[in-house]
Length: 273
Ligand SMILES: C[S@@+](CC[C@H](N)C(=O)[O-])C[C@H]1O[C@@H](n2cnc3c(N)ncnc32)[C@H](O)[C@@H]1O
Image 1 (cartoon, rainbow, N blue to C red):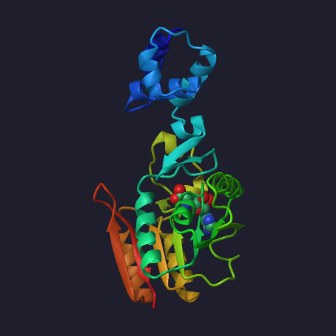
Image 2: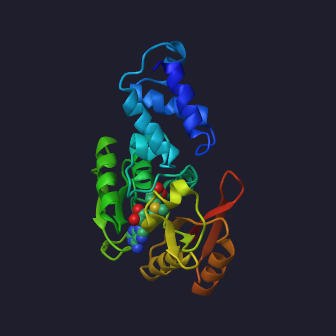
Image 3: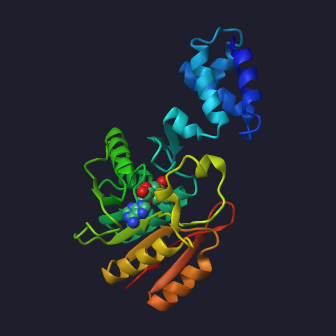
């Protein structure tokens, strides 16, 4: 099978499962060969080594397995992060949460924060890279994210700054911190999700409760009770009104909501004192 034949076969296979079958076929073949996409264009007649191995990758993608799990990494911000089943694939909108948190860290000269729900380490690692003097305690309730986040932090040279801890929310964090950052699970239990998400990504990373915002509200309460000054969170596009009502009830100094690049409500920053 030549490069051109492999791409034609893969494009057909991916027709119903992918929005961009040609592009994904190229990405998978480039990954399989350990080359970039330009190489494929320059070598259309080359025989594909281990064609059966390539076919297995394509079959997995045709069954909706996310591309990032197949290749074992995701691009996020300015880095590549290792990902694996059991760890949420970091999403581009979370880069905005980082930018909002970073503005406050810079302005307020914050040196200690906690992250709830570290996942692959996406948020803590980028913040650690931006602020070399920042110390972060990052929790997760599941073991696999803690293991993968540790590997990513080490690989990207920030493991000295990030302390990983198995914990429900901040239960195991007794130290005082100045800010909490979180992209918690915020989807409603009965939400209809695309097959690549529903069948492959970890439930613990997706569902925030029956309504979806239960964990977000718990985080707001806990941060207030612990007298931590700042909280920055990602949320669902339809959660602004319930979160606004909740913070009015709880009492905060200020809350600012932000939108994602699609113009949807996507998160908030709360100042408590
Ligand atoms: C939406 S993912 C976010 C992962 C990563 N921070 C990111 O933005 O890509 C939520 C993470 O929170 C963790 N989690 C869920 N419930 C938790 C809890 N009660 N306490 C701590 N972590 C929790 C999940 O295991 C998952 O890794």
